[in-house]
Image (tube, rainbow, N blue to C red; front, side, top):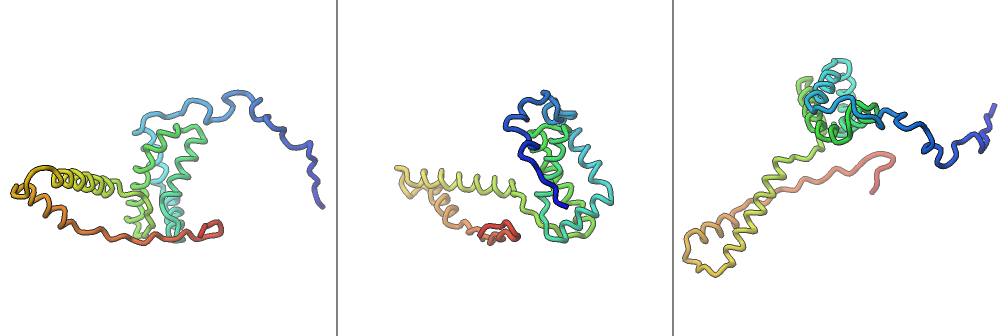
Amino acid sequence: MEIEISPFDQPIPGQSLTGEPKNNPWENPAEMSDLGEITAYYVKRLANDEIMDDIGALMQAGISIQPVVQSLITSGNIRGIHSVDSGMLVAPIIHQFIKKALEAMGIESKDNMIDYEKEADQKELDRFKVLAGQMLNGNVDMEDPGKELLSELIEDQPEEEETPEEKPKGLMAKG
């Protein structure tokens, strides 16, 4: 038996704008605003063995940690637990908690999170190279021992090995 859907049974354009204001949880003030409180909320939920077993199963299936964290944070935002910006601030902490919990369980996980420390070190090195290059190109003669040291430091920097990016897999992967 087939059910027919009439075009008149569907919402009309703009109908969502005529609903009662503050009817959805995310339209109201967040339940939690303190980052420590939000972090404790997620850690308490994730400390459950059954939940971590399920997350571990996802990791063994090849899912990385980042989408799991994003789903948790988005869900908390939709339910009105916290605001979007609070969720963004807490996400790296939750990511690390899950990563360490999985390591303790002996489960290997894909981690496509940005290494902020490595990125900051690289930016500092690039900034140093620019400043040193400007100093070397200045009007100071090459007899200057500081200038010689700078040129040696710039030339002796090891090149970073680039790791090939994994191509996305799946039905909706591009490429």
